[in-house]
Amino acid sequence: MTRIRLALPEDAGAMLALYAPYVRETAVTFEYQVPAPEEFRCRVETTLARYPWLVLEREGKLLGYAYASQYQSRAAYQWGAEGSIYLEQGVRGSGLGTPLYRCLMELLRCQGVRTFYGCITHPNPASEAFHQKLGFTQAGLFPKAGYKLGQWWDILWMELPLGERSAPPEPFRPFPSLERETVKKVLEQAKKALN
Image 1 (cartoon, rainbow, N blue to C red):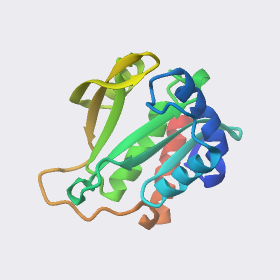
Image 2 (cartoon, helix red, strand yellow; image 1 turned 30 degrees about the vertical axis):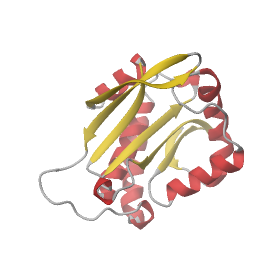
Image 3 (cartoon, rainbow, N blue to C red; image 1 turned 45 degrees about the horizontal axis):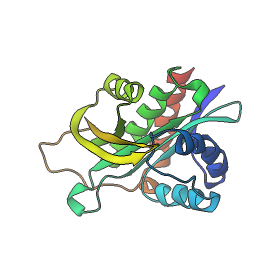
Image 4 (cartoon, rainbow, N blue to C red; image 1 turned 90 degrees about the vertical axis):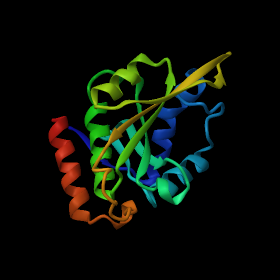
């Protein structure tokens, strides 16, 4: 059975193993060095204190993960969040990323996030098409923003409204403050989308 669940700090090793090829072999991430296991575990713990971090697994094997992070640090930006998603190379394009990312977006909506951002190395036709399919639109393009693997890469920012942005927002709710029942319902909906 394939399922989506909340990540635990103990998942850091498996997630790091999945992430490492992206660091070493692609410009999908602008990191040059694979993070140390302790550093990656710290990232998971730090993220979960404010935002969701989800894992996708089948029969206990990690197939991917997605998490949100702070878009910008100033107070007025608190209703925006940036997303990241990484899938095992063998399951990319299988349709499993869509319910994983939708689950993340629904949890963010419950937290009061109003705009979800994707920061994509450009060109990356697969990621761009994935985000467009989910309703994201282009918000900006930063030419030659990063240098990796012997070349300059553009950065494409895409955005998706998650809620009303014309009225004053409700206060942002850190992820641990969401009711367990709310989180459980969102995860159950994601399970139905997978199976």
